[in-house]
Image (cartoon, rainbow, N blue to C red; front, side):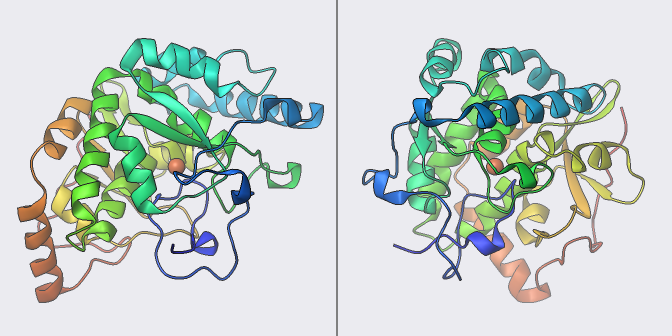
Length: 298
Ligand SMILES: [Fe+2]
């Protein structure tokens, strides 16, 4: 098993892991089964952890208006009261009734094959430990708050839920094609840091933005970042930043567009992207490229 490269994965990270980690991931993996899933030991959360979750939830909710997409805001209540860390089983029961997905607890980042396999079966892995108080504004690895608050509400949105399963199924095929890094870039620029056009302007749907106390507003409002129209080929050629705000965001028009783009067999696309990289190289994070299409405000 490859070690998760925790040092290279900040909150909002892609699930795929590359290379050998300098240090082991933070969670207790002895509790996990062969599929990396474990029990959420809800009784072990301290009062201080429940209070920290509540503070994180409140801080983030104060930022959502005008920055988060409507579907996320509508679904957020499904997580339940913010006073306590949610029990995954209870959220799962509501989620399964809505879209057929369930949450599974994991000790932290898991290898890409296990992650993709869970998604393909409509299972979303949620880290079961919460950051420390001193990590309120920034945490290196994704924790319970990032995974639950950032990712889970949109799994209540039927089209997005279908996209996530299609992504997992496509990624499992890709693992035999040497294209996992390309798929990780797609995940990064959509599921983690994606923007969606709305009649009122750009809004975030990416979990890395929605769970961030600072990049959410930056991604939607700042004049500096490059915002490009959704372009799978461009995303897969593009490197990304893990140590600062993204210099480039991609904007989808709808979740239907995202799902439709991920339905076909990606094999021909991988080949085209690999040929482009061989011929012209990767596109550095924030770099302009020939053929770039700026995202238009509605
Ligand atoms: Fe994430």
